[in-house]
Image: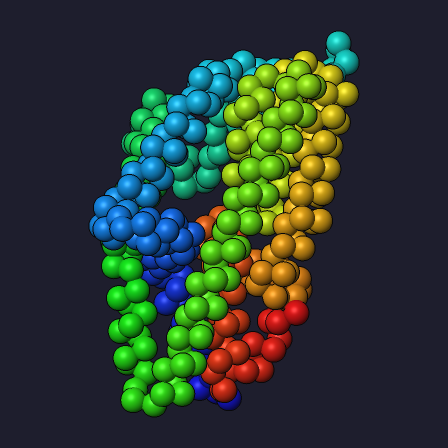
Length: 357
């Protein structure tokens, strides 16, 4: 029992420390499972594998570029309105009686008082008498801005480099076809029963991930269309950009829905200051996400992965704690793979039973 605990802790530590390696790898594998049927379909129509993989990867890049270009104007509008939104938020939070300062005003006054009255200790006073007056060095705020912009640019560059690595990984995995599958079957040994179990396990993982990802894209596309219709009808500015954000964030179960509802509520409040618009947009987005997510997505996920909801939620908490947003995105595919493997390995059948519905 002790060696199992030690091994588990070591595996978790390895996954956490090597997140920059495992996240692009697993994301590339999941995307490959999703796109592989298109390459197989082209291959059956006498299109060579490398040409089909190139065409599918190119269409993936072009489709993503078209989507980004279609909402670029609205995203730019949202970004340019951020300073004005910050001032309006300042006014909303700082509302108070005419003779009483608001919350932000009181915090600003407190900050000024602390800056004007630096703390002094007996040692500091003695040092001042011995060495003359103290010289206060004022930190240049532009240095903080430069540092923030530099760190932000590095973060964006890191995300883009990881996405580029995922794209190349998807291309090479699509190009390789079932080479790794044949090698894995060969490594199981000469036993025919083991080869059959390995083939069955890989086929189940492949089918489960394909169906799950296709269902996820279909339901999130439906959610984006319904959300765009609601936001446009309610008069929310940049409705298309917010609808795309809602569809993308809904990929993250539970947390994505709450986050987009909060962001839309803030945007609606800053746009008009009307709580009616806030209730319509945020409440409507929650309602749409509830109907699409709970009724449709949960039913389809249960039929496809055959996992119980408690196991899915626990896995979501674990992978979110381990890898953050990427962990929440990959939680269901990873747990589905683990369930299939455990159901076909005798030593882990108990874990597989716990994950099953």
